[in-house]
Length: 406
Image (cartoon, rainbow, N blue to C red; front, side, top):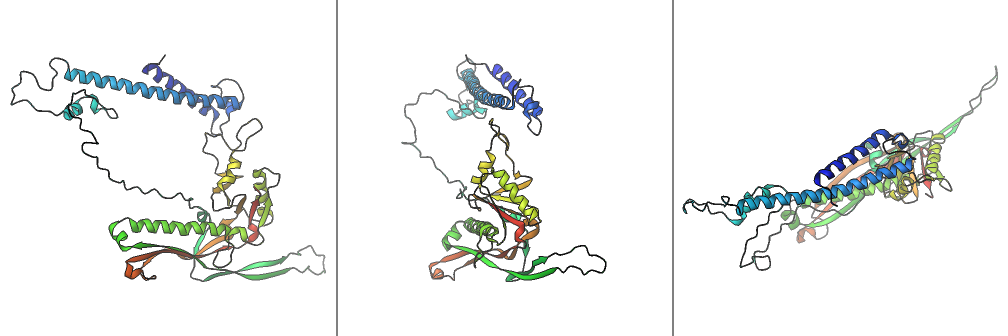
C-alpha cells in the first residue's frame, strides 16, 4: 500500500536523522566501533546498516517525488475546473457587454491559471480542434547551437606544480656537484697525525630544450568565429604543458628531450616484489631518507596503480584506505599523492623535488601566429604555434627514486 505524503515526509526525516547521528558518533576518523545508534555488531555490520539506510532514503525520495507530482497535478486540475466549469467562473460573464469582453486566447487562459504558474508542471486543457497544427504539417521549430565546445578527454595538468620553477637567461644550466666525499674524520691521540679526507667537485650541465607544436588555420575561420583564436591558443598551450609534465618525469635526457626523474643516473630503486604496495612505497621513502638524506615531497603514480592501493581491504573486507563513501586519501605515509598518466603503469616516482630539483624556464609558454610558413600567405592561412623552452635539473640524484613492479 502506497504511503501518504505525510508518512513519506516523516519517514525520510527519521532515517536522515539516524544516518546523521551515526556519522556524528563515528567522529572524524569514522570509528564505527563508537556508533551505538545502529545497534550492536562489528564495524562491517554497522557499515552495512548505514548503506541500507542510504538505499532506503533513495527509494523513499523517489516515492515522495512521485506523490508530490500527483498532488500538484490534482491541484492544477481542480483550479482549471473551478475556472472553466463552475458557474460564475467563466473567463467573461455571460451578461457582460460584448464590447467590454476581453478576448483571451487558449494559451493565455492556460498560463493565467494558478496551477500553470507553479514551476515544473504542465497544464492540459481539453479543447476540441478540427485541424491539428503539428510539427510535420506546421511550423518547424528553430534550433540554435549552444556555445558549449566539448573538449577531447585529456589528463589534468599538475606535475609541474610540484616542482620549483626558476626563470633563466642561459642556454644551459650548469652547476657543481660534489662527486667525491671521503670522510675520514676520527679521533686523534696527542701528537698523532690527523686522518686525511678527500673532496672532489664535478661540473654538471643540463641543456635548455624546446617543446613546440602548431596548427594551421584559415583567415576566414579567425574572422568569422571570434572564439576560434582563444580556443586554439588554449588547446595548443595545453598540448605543450602536457608534454612538459611527461618530460620532467620520464624524458630520457637525449636532445631534444629533457632529463626526467626516471632516467636520472643513480636514483634509488625499490622493487615491489611480494610486498604490499604501501610497504614498497615506504621502503622507497626510507632509501630517499637514508641514501639521499632528503625528505620525499610528492609521490607520482598512475591512476591504475593507485586504484590497487585504494581498494586494499582487510581479511574481513574492511577498506584500509577508507570507505567507498569517502572521497579517499590524497596522501600515503604522509606524502602527497599525485595521480597522473604522465607516469608509466607499474612504475611510480618520488623524491625531494622541493629542495633538490627545479625546472629552469628560458621562455615560458608563448603563442605565435604567422602566414610565412610554406604557401600559407597566398592561400590565406596562418600557422598558430605554441612553444616553451626550459631545462629540468635534479641536483642530488639520490634524493629521488622509483618503485617498480607495482
